[in-house]
Image (cartoon, rainbow, N blue to C red; front, side, top):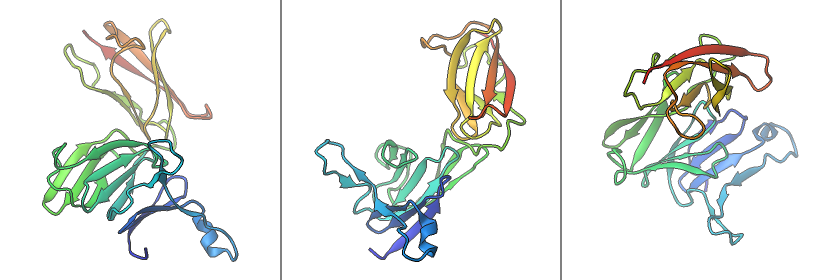
Length: 230
């Protein structure tokens, strides 16, 4: 198709193109400006049944908007099927919101905007705007101004504990004051989430916990304290 409705460059420099017949990706867009170079434009093929054939991702869908979040994952707004949220390579569906299974008020989604600081995602439809609290935020260049929220974690609180101000895809290890690791994770962009539970899924005991943060190379580090009260 020659009908391009939107495009977005992701954090790997790849260009995602939304058309009236689905999505294509330019994996080497810089080659567009070089003579006799392959710019490697492809559709994403999803082979759910493992027969080696597969179907194009969002094939036949008009894709009105594409947004990339702080974790390099992709949001797709479609004209007829609501909103899709996928892994960074587009091959794993994480969410599919429609007016039938979510508060989305229309399946005709025209625009998506992301608040990079809070992770809030806004969906503009032909019937109005709906928001969704996303997980990923924009990462920092350094582990500066790292903080946890809520802190202290009050008795009865069962929501997520957010650790913010991190470098992109930071490694996070949470320990008790004796140095025992109770949980570890990788940040979604600039934010890590802890449920307040250990590796066995049990609520941790009352006490002070330390979140040790480092970037992928180990050159930017930080520590923040979290008080949990049960």
